[in-house]
Length: 319
Image (cartoon, rainbow, N blue to C red):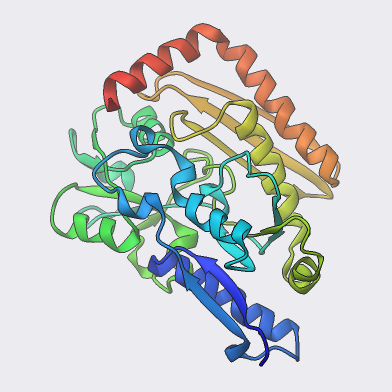
């Protein structure tokens, strides 16, 4: 009996859509593979179970990957499909991000039942988001807004808006597109005002580092330009000790044969911002060096006092 290829994923509609897309791409890339040869294995993560706490107090980004990575290391699955922005900057020993699919639209979408766009929100309107970055960028432009914490998958957050728990929220446009729900977005937010989270819009596939056969099987799905951009953004995130406790944003893309990157660090009220930008040649080492350099510049510009204040403010707000 032919052994099935097992793809591990979370069970949210978006995660399943991403895993299903990877299965379809594999079938298209390999004549020898049929749909019945590939099994999608749903793994419930700590992040899916803990919904009554902010990610910062519950344990951070790793909550969405821990159980999946344990299954991968144990050999219970052959690869794992993730939203790249959910991935911690440090992976368990023996695992690697082998493939990045071509990036979807990296922008945030504005969602509301009442108002057409972000700047149309009335004075004191309630914005729902669990993202410190989105909170800070919103308050940077509209310090009058009230921000409440929203957690849950796309459908849960949309339902909260329908139920009137907030006047508006932000969602990643990439997720809406992958769910065939672009119509839900009232407006697409400008990259100038709302720089995305590092790696937003990119799907990655994680494998065991020693699994050469799986690496070769997945190779046709790899998009080199996306990989370069995400490597730079993740390097920046790592340099800033990036987690859900730090409001950071970054976006890199190929322009005229070079990798161009913009990065930002904000206070949680958005009233302090530190920005840096630069460009690099299109190779892995240069991309990583660019992200690290921009992280170093922003860390130096912000200074240790900023990070100490940020830590106190985050703790006071969410703990």
